[in-house]
Image: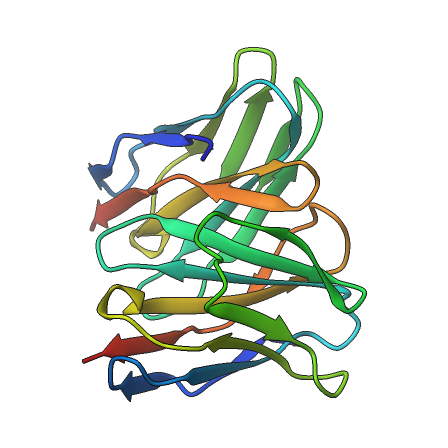
Length: 111
Length: 113
């Protein structure tokens, strides 16, 4: 079983703060890395699919970077809003179609 | 917007009984997955399915588990003889391509008593 680590496990920030989380994964046999946003009582929704070393993706106030050689990805949220409160999951895709998830970072943004 | 649907949302079953969890993936997707999350633990990959056969499976997916796509729209997960430790939230997902973003259903909470 491949190990995918996310840190921190949880984060409490004030509205307007910027924040970032880390996903660490094995650097060998990399195929892709996904970030998902998972709100309570809903299903995970894809934020980013990242495949190339050095990839940077952006969606509104959320962006992500990828370093496949050292095995990490960062997710950044600029100016956090209460609606950003969710668990953020990363998934390491190995051998084309086998997903390994991290345990997630639970973000709570206080108004 | 197309979505993955799962039924039932919650199933309670006696230990040793067979259960079938049902999923309707997004219609033009070709790759299908089952995951589970035991309470308080990580989401775990169970199996991926493509072209009417299993393409990958995890160490968890032993002989008591099986998947099929019986009619071209449903995608089912069968657990032959449930154990207490099978209690979890089971998620179905589908994607349009290898390694592409997965679209998840709302999950089926399975409780084995």
